[in-house]
Amino acid sequence: MANLQQRLAAAASASTTADAEEARARSEIEAMRASILAGETTGDRIRDYLIVKFGVIDESARERYEAINALMKGKTGELIVVHYTESVCTIHRFIGPNEYENVRYVDIAILAGDELVFEFGEKDATCSLPIKSYSQQEYRWTITEGTISEAHAGKIFLAKDCGKPVQSPSLLRGDWRPFNLEIGEEAAMAWIESNLMDFRVKKNLFLLILEKLGRLTLTSPEEDEDEE
Image (cartoon, rainbow, N blue to C red; front, side):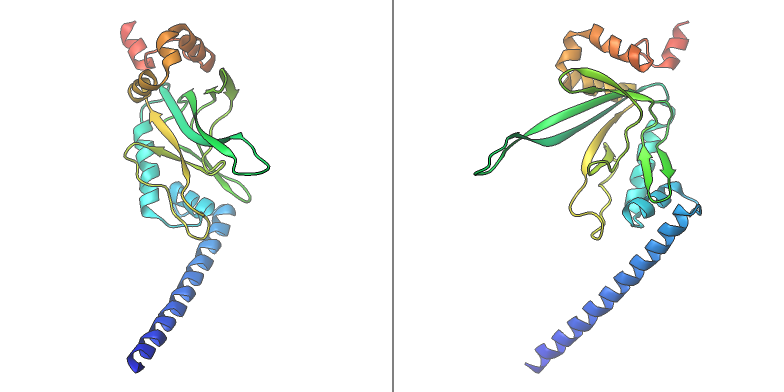
């Protein structure tokens, strides 16, 4: 009994110490967050963003953003596909459980730059894609001016082999759902050919969408120059 009581006391002490250390760490991060929003920087905008947006210092998350940037490098003017799944309520019941269906959404855009865009305001930070407009598949393909930012509606940018979403017990209640990225002409066209039946059978539709997005061909600008 005495031995168990000693272990209980040791566990309680360790728990208290851990809570105190966590509180101190959170306080330091909040202080850094305020400093970054006031205009200071750690020297790494990805790290600045992680501190401001998620309240974490997470090396694996920082490396994931670097990996996405590496996939974008040199691909200005090429395609990017953003696809994600939402659980949509299809039948709402006043009595009994509602019914839900997983619906896939797809956005197609042209890269206007070759790295993620990090911006810092007075109270928050954003990470967005370097695009000027995108075409979204709903009931039909529509063109929307502007970019796509992550952490909107609980989503985060992910690309193949780019690691897991950032985790923060204090800010993230559960996992972020992914905005899946297919980056560059080769990856984007492979995904489109495999997943979008309407583009496989209606190439003119695809060409029209690309034209509205600012592209006149299915090839990259570099390939167009080689042909001249």
